[in-house]
Structure formats: structure tokens, C-alpha cells
Length: 375
Image (tube, rainbow, N blue to C red; front, side, top):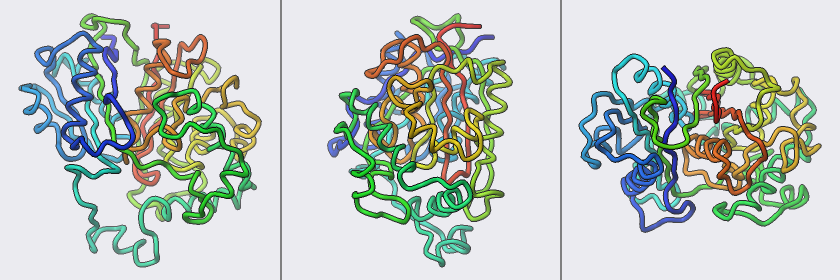
């Protein structure tokens, strides 16, 4: 059975939305995705989401009695997992059409859960006592080791933010659109060495939703799921096997490429979760687009920028477009737009797009291979 994304849409706005609760963001995104698919809640018999509210609450709020639910919560990559799991459920006959929702009041915190960390958790026992508090300080562990072992310079790291701002400059919905230079990045406030403010993701409100179903049930131009993969490494960053590469990125990418039966030359467009500027560099290398230690120069040479040979994070990414806390939904949304020819910064002739999601601090990973036609 051929599984497709039949509907995809974000909330009416992303950015600062103090008038929206977390639940409202979910429901607005769901409404928009259903309209995009030409469907109603009566067509939906599967619901997936992550966090609070969970899939039961979302189904109830929409008036759906689901035959299948997925509340997999593995960080920002969760929505890629949901697409993969929904495809498996549809092929197995467990449900026919799945609604995947995301809503997060990451900036305004309206209806959002409280931040908390148990003292008996792995992070509470083995990292927090040593000053590792949250993503900015956690991700420094990997970034600094990568810089030491590969020779990545501060200027090359800054080039990631510069390249993605070039895409955001073309996107009216992006939170930050003004073009920036390497000098601007390095002059921005130091958050946690080596990360300057412009090398750290945004904190925004927003949401998105997807409708996943079989090709036969799709009512508009479908986006085909050619392959997918998922993996995980360590729940805390200090226990990664190698700080300079993500095992989850590698394994999920290998699985997705193998299922899709594609090579790197087939890929026209790439979305890599970019919580911090070094994460796309890991994605480029771990997916096999460039060799070890080559990603920094690859970006600096303009290959991922507008007009480059591997367009990357074309909505502006988490660094310039939006980042509610769990960004994976927005990466999928941009991939769908590019494949449909509907993106604000449209890349010519996109037929195959790859989406790589990160959860936590390299804890989980998932990869999707999407296309606008079957091979």
C-alpha cells in the first residue's frame, strides 16, 4: 500500500502568539491541515501527537473516536516518528487516515506545562551537578569536541546561521528576515561558548498538522512517503558513543535511504533539524552528503544557500523561521511545500526531499524520504 501525506498546514501565524493556548494551536493547525486535505474530522480514525495535551485530549476536542493512537514522545523528532508509525498502522489495516498535530506555546507559555527535572533522573544525577543545564549548555559538549577534532572554525559555524537567514529573507512568515553576516553572528551575545545568540534557535509559539493516509484516499496532490527510519542513542548527551557524530542520524538515514531505494544524487532538497548551528553539520555528514569534517566548508562555500546544489532548511530553519521547542513538524511542513511547489522560497524542480529530525540532545533521530511522485 502506498502511504502519502494528503494534508499539511501550520497555524495561521507562528512567532509570538500570546492569545493562543497550547490546545488552540493544536486545533487551529488540525483545522488547517484537514482543509488542505479536503477532509473533515469524520475522515479521521487515527490521532498522533506528543506532550500535553496528548492524543486522547486532541481526539476528544475534535470530536474524533479513534481506532488508533500514538503518543510517542521522543523530543523534537517525534512527528517524524509519528509519520513512520502512522504509515505502518495504515499498511497493517489498523486505521485508514491519521491526523498528526503539534501545538506549542514555547514563548508565551499559555497552557504549557511547567519545566521540571527530577533529581533522580539521569540528567539530574550525572549532568546537572556539573553545570549542564538545558540545550545551550548540553549542545556545547558536542560542538566543542567537533570543533577540536575536525578543525571547524567559529567563522564556519557562523556561516550556518548566515546561510539559513538567506532563506528566511525570502520567507514572509519567518520571525527574523534581515540578512546577516558572519561578523554579525560573531558580534552577537555569547550564550554558552561557542554559541553566540544567532547560532541558537528561536523560542516561539506555533503549531502544525499532517494528514497521513493511503494514496487511494487522498483528495489532492499527495506527497509520497518513499522511506523512513528511526533510532536513538543516549538519553543524556554525556553518554554518546562519539561526540562528533550522531549514531541516530546515521542509522535512521541509512534505513530511510534503503527503503526508498535512493542515492544522495537523487535528493533535491534537505531539511535538517537545527536547534543549534552545528546540528545541520552533523546531519550533512551523518547522512553521507559530505565526508567527516567537510560540512563547515560545504556550507561556507554556499552549497546550501539559495542557488546552491543542496538547498538546506529553506524556510529559514529553527535559527530564523520558528522554533517552538519541538521543531520537527515545521521541517516536514517545509518539505511538503517544496515538493508541491508552494514554498515561499521555492527551489526549482524539487522531486525528492529528505527530512532529518533530532530529539533531545542527539537522543533520538528519524529520517523521512518524501517525493511528489513514485519512482
